[in-house]
Image 1 (cartoon, helix red, strand yellow):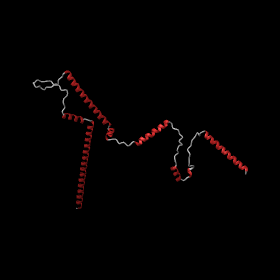
Image 2 (spheres, helix red, strand yellow):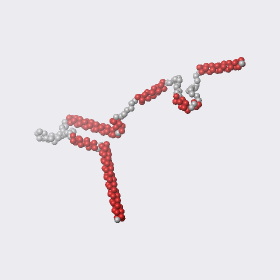
Image 3 (cartoon, helix red, strand yellow):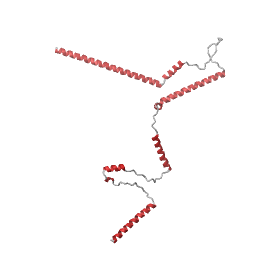
Image 4 (spheres, rainbow, N blue to C red):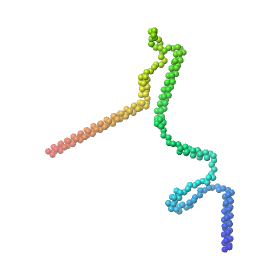
Length: 235
């Protein structure tokens, strides 16, 4: 009995010394690998219901927090979080009618702006020419040419730099220019095509009714002829 107790004490002493040596080594130098602890060994031994419950209730692995982030990594994470916040906080924007029209009809908008720019340039050119003519007349003492007679009866030459355009003529000119615009001509063409289609549909309906009447009349005539033939045969 004493021999067995001595052997047991010897084994316990060796185990304790082995554990102490490993503890000292762990304190002196850190491990070169890391692992994720798994708290549920052998899940296949459980029933399917218990497995499902364990998979749903299983908590994700949380790091220990010893990871060291550099300043660049922190900046990247902050930029990403701020971007997500801006996207989530930004409300849904519905465009107005003018913005939708500009987005859908960019060609029409660009042509209209180009036409406005040309009109403005022509107006500026007319104004510059008017000022130039006035300065020239003042410099060379040029009087406007006219065939109107003076009070004494002698003809006096009068040269008008700009002729006054009446409102009717201006209206007719703008109306002619408006009718020549491509969008106006396209609209007129589409209206004519729609009218032609409607006329074709009305003609098709009338033709169908005419054909139906003709077929019904022929059917009545054939029925009357058959009845008369049957009556003659019986007689």
